[in-house]
Length: 121
Image: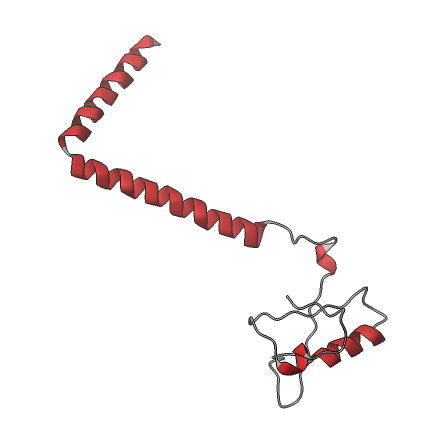
């Protein structure tokens, strides 16, 4: 059992001598390893938080997205704040209704919605 420890120690001494002989190559190898580990950690953290973790809501499988389209606008680009308020007031099928903006800004009609309970994220 001690034989493999002696071989490993000999290999480590040889590796240290080789690394001391080529400091530029050593620095490049260490930098490459550090960048690889750092990028791998960062990418996995993003993937874990976005794709693997559950949504931070009670019963996330019950969350739905509502959109409004017309015969001329089939993309469902947005819903006015007063429409959301009307959906909220008339809804008998949903526990609650909230609105959000996924493009970082909100139109003037949405910003002037009369209900103070509308949440914009």
